[in-house]
Image 1 (tube, rainbow over the protein chains, first blue to last red):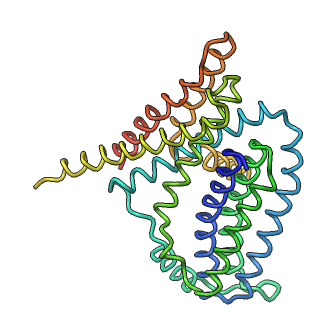
Image 2: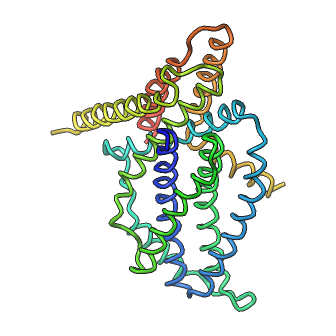
Image 3: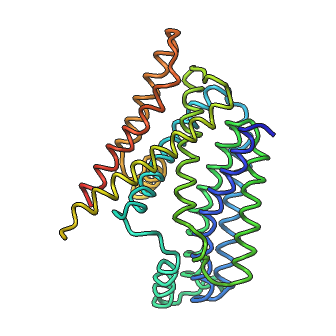
Length: 248
Length: 66
């Protein structure tokens, strides 16, 4: 397995795990507040839509020339990665509240308890819609990550393996504990995913733009180290700046 | 029309996110890399240099608007 393949597997696993933890929180809230039938129906319907998206888009991406694909995918990943990283740096430096899965779960649960009950085809519509939208929106990001990472690195199946591992792990733990996975270090994971997306984004954008990396694939390690370094420096600078701005 | 606008808003949020400046500067940096590469100048360094600059500008905007 090459450096690129290793990073592909790790990146898709981490990114998909983060999205699946968020989807799980929503499905759990829908299931506990509105009944498991509607929550699972929403989960199933969203899964079908996502599967169709993969079946339609997957083969289409493989016919696009690799350099053009890397340019588009690299640019998109770089934009995604920088947005994730910005939020992660703001959280780590104290400018933004930490992502709290317990608080989100409590809010979703309260909303779901308060909503009016409307049944369609024997399914509670609010529970179905909540679960469907949650899984579809988080799932679309998973699909995007798997297809773009996989196609740009030339191995959609390997990216799918990373996503499948994340699915088995998150769904398995979710089934076992039937509670939001608040102990998952989600903020640290989001930071790591932001770093990974930015690293791949930089690497593929440069290749897609027609430039060559010194050291070829091994340059990913250099880019990764650089992105980690500047992120940590920015956290440190902003944290110090924030503390200095607080009156003693 | 309402559905079309919602569809467009979804994709804008999904791809561009909450700071359009990031996407704009990424496009400029990639364009500059492509131009340098087209005239046979080593261009791999440009994007890694642009990343901290873009991040810094976006972070400052986020902190100012908080």
